[in-house]
Each structure stands twice: as C-alpha cells, then as structure tokens.
View (cartoon, helix red, strand yellow):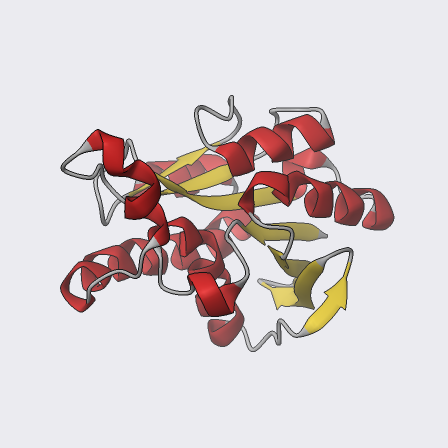
Length: 185
C-alpha cells in the first residue's frame, strides 16, 4: 500500500495558491485514476483506490500546512505503511516554476509542511516530489507570494508541473523512484 500525500491548506480559502500545489496534484491524480477524495479521517480528506495494481490512499491533510505531519503520521501508523511507501508532493520556491524534482529522501529544507512531516514520522527517508513555484520578485513578499491566488497565465505554467507530478506517481509505483527521477529530473 502507498500513501500519496499532497501538502496544502484547506481548499476553499487557499485553492489555486502556490502553497497548494500538493493538493492540486492529488486532485489531478484522483481524476485520472477515478479515486474519490471525499472521506474524512485523522483531520484529512482522503480516498482509497488502485494505481498500477497497487492499493493507494490519496491524502490531503486539513490541519493547515505547518501541521501536515500529524495527519501523515496518523495514516502511516493506522495502515502500517512503511516510510518508503509514502510519497509527499509539495511546492518549492527554489525550483523554477513549471518544473519538478523527485528525490528518494532528504531534509525538509525551509518548507514548514515538510518540517512537520519529518518531525512527526521521525524520518527523512521517504520519497518526495517538489513542484517548482519559483521565487517572488521581492523576497520580503514570500508569504503573500505563496498564499494569494495565482493569475491564469502563471497557473498555466504551474499546471504543467502539476501534470508532470501526477504522471510520475504511477511510474514511481510500477518501476521505482530511480526510473521516475531519470525521466522527470
């Protein structure tokens, strides 16, 4: 079983913001693989289904970004999912907008959602897909940059990265992380 986690903030207020790239990717995966993400458990919206013949849970923590790890930990423990089968998808300021980076493991960097996940599951050994959102023109404007709605022209660029991330998930499941890294990094 795989736990595929998209990091973000509760959708109504924060939909279509740079900080919700993880949620947007989960939405695209759910649509493609016909998985309804509409159940509530452990302060999360989730749905269960199959991708490439493997059981998966698609997860959108509803704890707000900075406490995302609590939901990941609760699902991990309840379903006894090993950390190497937890894929976390999140936005990254340090990556060019419209591109993705896949890694097998690593530190959380400056991303508060990832800091929470690493802290709560007590390991850095889990795969992740970082969706590039680029840096704002003025670095003192970071909070506004990640939490305001994205203009249509820019969202079209970010949508390509969301689609790449959604395409990478079945490759990661069926062929492994290395194959996905070679194809998308």
